[in-house]
Structures are given as C-alpha cells and as structure tokens.
Image (cartoon, rainbow, N blue to C red):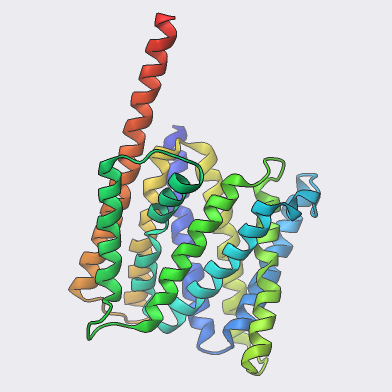
Length: 299
C-alpha cells in the first residue's frame, strides 16, 4: 500500500514538473529568462517559508553555511539556469530526455564521492545511457544543436545537487532546503537580467505563466518528497521516468514539436538504462539484506 501511494505521488510529481517546464518555456517567449528565474525563485521561496513556519522550524538555520549547502546552492543555480535555457532554445521533449540521465550521473558521483560500489552491469547501463544522450544531441552531425549542451550541463548540475543534498546536515528539513533552493535563484536571475540588459516587462499572460510555473514547481517538489518518504526508493524511483512521457505529450500537443526517430530511440536508451540500474540496485540491496539476515541467524 505504501509503495502504491509512493508510486502515485511520483507520477504526480513528474507530471507537475512537466507542466512547470511548459509554463517556463511559454513565458520565455515573452519576457527575459533572468526575470523568470528571479520571480520563480521569489514565489517558490515564499511558499516554502510558509510551509517551514507552519512546521515550527527556523527559516534561517546556521547549517545553511555548511559546505554541502553552499555546494548545493551552486549546483541548484547551475541546473535551474541551464535547463531553463535548454527548454527555451531547444525542444522540450529532447531537453527532458537528456535530463533523464541525471540518476546515472548521480550514481557515478556517489561511487567517486561516497565510495559506493558499482558492478560491471551498472557500469554498462551508464555507458548505454550516455549513448542515448549522444543520439539526442548528435555532436558533429548535421542535426547537432549547440544549445542542447545546456541540457547536458543541467544534468550535471542537478546530479550535483542531489549528491550535495545527501551530504547536507540532517538537521535541515526538506522544507528548509526548499527555501534555500529557491532563494538562490533570485540573485542569479537578477544578475543575469542586469548582464543581458533586457527590459523588465511583464504582461498579464506572462505573469500568469510565471505564477503557474511556481505553483506547479512547488506542488511537484512536495509530491516528490511524499513519494520518497512513502514507499521504498527502489520501487518508487523508476517512476521518475514518466516525466519524459509527460514532456513528450506537452512538446507535441502544446508546442507542436515533432521528435524524430533517433531522438525517440535515444530517449528509450536513457530510460531503459536508468530503469535497469534501479532494478539492479534493488536486487543487490535484497541480496545484501538476505546475507545480513543469514549472518545474524548464524551468529
């Protein structure tokens, strides 16, 4: 029952993230991306401040100055900024497909930073996943889009954020992390706006789009938190890949995108390799658990 609830909330989170991306991409056609980031950060921060205060927690905790939190802020900014540029300058479907390689990169990072063991099969799945990414961006070929590299950088940023979150002080709640994660987008967006020199202009439609992105972004974050706390990670995590399905639907029906066969095959490789990695992790965890139980009984 817990796994069913967790899986359902994971799907809801991925659908909300896809809708958030839709609003950001639509708003970017009308206003500067720096302004979008600043307002998105402000809205998300205010919502998480309210949620933090509701839980009786401190909004500004001394632990925010710890090294993992500072690194997390840098990775958050990198991921958010470059992915916003990616979905603005390239098809939403292809940028979202590349983003699905984030768990694979995070797994590699965990191996090098936290010393987690990765077997040959999971190394192979990582290689297959990166082949899928190369199929989508096609470096050196006629269909290559340089702007798609923003999605690759975003994947590195989000993977780094996930790893830094794992190393974050346990005294900080998810709500507090949400406050800090959205806060850093404000100065980043404003600096980007000053650097570009683009005019600050908002109309009713773009304002509604930014508000929509903020609301769905917060809803997605909350649903993701519920999902990860409700069910087993190994059961719930594979449903992250439904984000690609929702992104494809939004891309095709809202932005009239037409992903070609190579992009679809590359997306399939990324999702398949990521899903296999998660299943393999689940199997190894079950084997280790069985060995521990046997050892306890023998003792």
